Every structure is written in structure tokens, then in C-alpha cells.
Image (tube, rainbow, N blue to C red; front, side, top):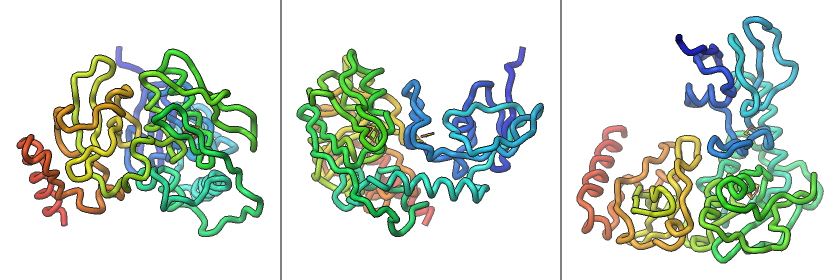
Length: 336
Ligand code: SF4
Ligand code: FES
């Protein structure tokens, strides 16, 4: 028997999805500009979503059976589709205006320190504030400020930048043996804490850095080493007994400045990686290099010399990679 499908139309584009799919994931099946932004939802983390409201959409028709529109905008990461549902995202001025308000709200306590933040260039809040943010804040009260906290010897928490998306809490909860940190207090006082500032010390905890949508959790081995758009990402793998060993190496010249999980089009890691791959294997010879990482053409990371990437260490060692670089360069030239 054919699998049951629900037809949902998002910004005028129809898509058939299995019952139980959220509006956000239905939009991701379509892809492109109509996909709502998501600052807290993370498809690989169970229970994530519903915290940040950046994914708000308008349901202009509830379903074929009950065509009444939903009375309020809904979080698309938490609302499942109905057959015949019609949804508006970027085609609704109401949604665009509401999202602008959400971004302004997220920025109330977030410092405007992009020029010195390691996350700059790959920060979703930076992208969103660029797209929707007002030029000036209307907030007159002092911002929340916290002391920086070292979570173990490799990760730093800078709570001033945290938007309380809970992703790191889910990582700790779902990827490691024991949960060692969480969100304490509520409302304006809420903060990420290890309760007794104890080190988060287990094999997969480094993934909190990759899932953090802002610069609140950063890699201390990479902090202030370079701007991300001056680095050259390369996909690589190694035979790792703990994780898949599939990573992205971020080169500056012949040096690997940092190692991260590989990310998909929605900035989510494809495979969570272990701390050994992330922190302890930063030599080219630790890895089998594959090809330059495919970076979205709109990303600032492609803005510099990325397309003419030929790191000296790699040229000597990997002819396949060099050929891939040249092919990519030719492709870029053709597109100009
Ligand atoms: S530290 Fe980062 S990942 Fe954790 S809740 Fe704050 S913003 Fe989210
Ligand atoms: S992504 Fe839906 S509420 Fe945050």
C-alpha cells in the first residue's frame, strides 16, 4: 500500500510529506529562501526546538477538512503539517515583521561584539540581525553580563552571548554518559551552568561548540587565532575508534587551526565527532584529506581566497585534493 502523504503548500510551493512532519522540515524538503530560520531546533537533537521563535510562520489555511487559518503565528519547528495546509513564510509581511521583533528581542542582551567574536562569519544570529535587525536598539536598561567560565580546559562559556537555545544542554544530555550542565534560574536570570563549574569531561562534549548558534561556547584551542573567512576548510577523515572520524579541517597556510564536525546546508553537523578528533589531532598527517569543503556561495567564508585554495602542505601530499581545487577554481571562473 502506498505510504500516506500530506500535501502542504509553503509560500505557494506544494510538497508531499509523511504525516507527523513539521512545517519546518516540510520547508526544508523544498529548500531555498522559503525555509524558516531555526536558532534552537536541531534535527539531530531530540526534543530541540520551540525556544527561540525565529521559525515563526503563518498558517493561512489549517487543512483541507478545516480550512480556518490558525489565529496566531506558530513555531514551524513544533507544528506538524495537516493535509491541505497552506503556510506563509517570506510571503507574509506579518511573519517578516514578527521575526524582526524576535531578532530584536534576542539582541536585547546579546553584545554587539562581532568584531572580536570567534563565531563571526558563521553565526546565525549575525545573519539574522543583518537580514532583519533594526539599526539601533530601543533597549535602555543595562545588558546582562557574566564572567567568562572555563568549562574544562578546551571550552569557554561566554554567557553574555547565549540565547538560551538549549542545544548544548541536549548535546550533553543525549551524547554523553552523564548530564553535567543545564539551565538554572528562569526568565531574565536564566543561565547555562555546570552548577558547580565543574569541567564537562567526556568524549563528545566538544560538540557543544558546533551546535551553539552564537559565540557563547567557543573552542579555546582556536580562540582569537583567526577570522573564519581567512581559513580554508577541507573535508578529511581518519580511522577513529570512537566516532565516524569525518571532519572539516580549517587551514591557515599549512596549519590546521581547528577541527569541527561537517555541517549540512542548515548548519547542523552531519556526524558528531569525539574530542580526540577535535582537539588532539591537528596535524595534516593525522588525516586523510578528501576535498575542499563545499561552502554556501553566500557565506562570508567564500568571500576571500577560498576558491584558489592550495595549501602548501596539501599540494605535496594529496594530488587528488589539488585536482579538486583546480576544478573548483575553474567552476568559479565559469560562473563569473
Ligand atoms: S550556550 Fe550556546 S548552545 Fe548553549 S543554550 Fe546558550 S546559545 Fe544555546
Ligand atoms: S527553531 Fe523553532 S522555536 Fe527555535
